[in-house]
Amino acid sequence: MDKTLMILGLGGVGTHAAHLAGRLPGVRVVVGDIRADHARQVANSLIAESYFLQEYKRFPDVAGFGVDMLDTAAIAEALEHYRPDVIFNATTLLSWWHLHR
Image 1 (cartoon, rainbow, N blue to C red):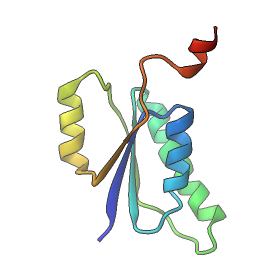
Image 2 (image 1 turned 60 degrees about the vertical axis):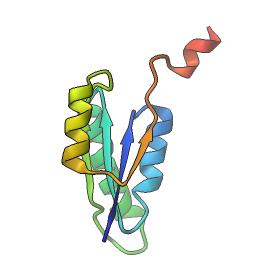
Image 3 (image 1 turned 90 degrees about the horizontal axis):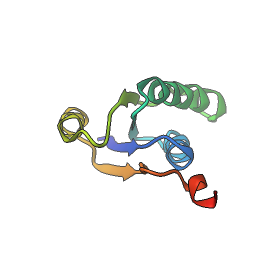
C-alpha cells in the first residue's frame, strides 16, 4: 500500500523536498501552496522529472492543489480529501531572505 506524503509550501525548501520525494517508489506525493498554479506546475514537473531521470520509466502518483494555510476549513478539507500519512510543512509567513535585509 502506498503512503501519502503531503508537502505544504512550495518555496525553495518545499519544492526541493517535493522533487526528492517524487523519486521514491511507493510514495504518493501531494503538494499544496497558496499559489494553486505553482502547485500544479511543481506536480507536473515531478512527473516529467521522474519519467526522464529514472532508470525505470514510471509516472508517480502526484497531485497539486492550492490552499491558504491561514484558512483552517480549507486545510481540514485537504486533509480529509488526501488523507496524508506524513505532512511536511514548509510554509512561512516571512521568507528567509527578508531576514537579511
